[in-house]
Amino acid sequence: MSILVYTENWDGKFKKLSFELVSYASAIAEKAGLSVSVVSIGNVDNDELNKLGNYGASKIIEVKDDRLNNLVNGAYSSIISQVAEKEGVKIVVLSNNNSGKALSPRISVKLKAGLVAGVSAVPASLDPFIVQKKAFTGKAFANVQVNSDRKVLTLSQNSFGIVEKGGSANIESFSPEFSENDFRTEVKDVKKITGKVLLNDAEVVVSGGRGMKGAENWGSIEELAGLLGAATACSRPVSDEGWRPHEEHTGQTGKIIAPNLYIAAGISGAIQHLAGVSSSKCIVAINKDNEAPIFEAADYGVIGDALQVLPALVDAVKAFKAEN
Image 1 (tube, helix red, strand yellow):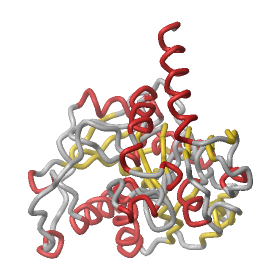
Image 2: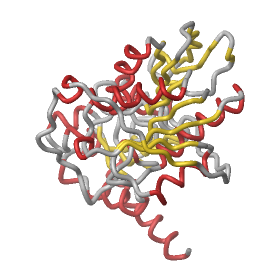
Image 3: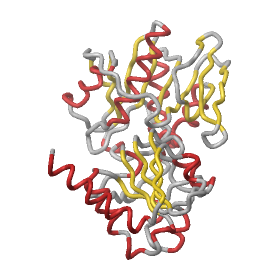
């Protein structure tokens, strides 16, 4: 028996997210005395697949089909479920990103498995099976007990970390059986953002709120993000005003992110916004209102006008990079 991980790839390459998932599954496997198998869907070179062995995977099951070059929820969930049946899997692990949120309920139904979304730690107990997740927009933790024989877990990004094992994995090919229903949804076109760090993948995010006063003042946000290799984000009022694209909106009604560093400039810190960023490892707040709610959630705070503080911060980062 084994734990099965679905590792998403981006144009044939794995990102930190995939390595975190395998590391997490490996930690559970050590505790349960199981092995870790990985299912990879799409065209990925063997050299890239072999990287997963370094994080604890002992077997990699690859599925290649030209119809699978884009995410098709019905087909992907069918593949993962069939692999789980074949391998005698008790636990399936996916990311709690858009793909994982779409696939996990389908897999749960197919396997008659209990589902816990957004877990943040290795199970505290295996019998009974109890695993932790955040609750009340990150203000509390819930210990969820799963009584079903099989379990499906989606892991919150940046909640576990990457652990290198230095191992290797065997690669096997698998040919799933498809039904017409698996492809009843047809992907006509896929538009990808290029030339910038994607918000969901970013380890550093620089975000702006209404304190930036207007779209014309976003230059310092973008310049700081460029220096830090960061993604840019914004609060909902900013996207509603049309200052920034809606794809950058973070919060309860936008994207939920968990970067290592989140810099919030001119953001007051409404509870809806904090719900989307509270899992960040470190929050730095810049606001001229010393009573702004954002400071209650921040690890570091700068009381000052963001339009003045950001250019100074940009200059400081440039000076640091020049010296190093």
